[in-house]
Image (tube, rainbow, N blue to C red; front, side, top):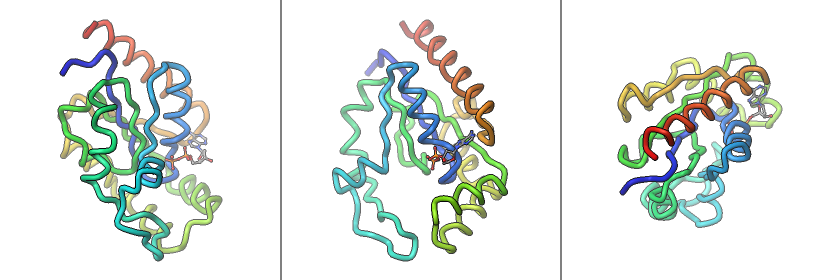
Length: 173
Ligand code: DAT
């Protein structure tokens, strides 16, 4: 099925800036922000609550069913700390946001993350887990790594993604 607007995944370790990017990008471009966290909660796409990690245990099949119709129409910005579950055919661009360890530590402390979850996320960022996951799951040319330490970088990233969307529409219009 052809899409009138591209589908973009914005991924990265929790605290990296996904929601900030997605919300502002949706506002600027009119694309729809799909917060997978919210979908999981609202449509109960989970198998319960993990106490230790203070997070839902996601049922990926249910999640994909819940968003499939909407994503297939195009124009979605998917906000999630994983990316390899989404079918390749749905996705036009994968943005992997990155952040320095100290900045991430401060952001997760602010969020009062439990120690075990904090450590896991910081390790994951250092080990580039999400970047590798994106590169393994999608074609190299649609995966972009962007820094998200400062407000200036956030703005530059939004400009770049917005320009990319404009180009996509020209090429696919
Ligand atoms: P995520 O959705 O990846 O968990 P978020 O968008 O909620 O991340 O951001 C976490 C916190 O960090 C929030 O207080 C906003 C701040 N933040 C995110 N990206 C930033 C950036 N590039 N510059 C400054 N602050 C940023």
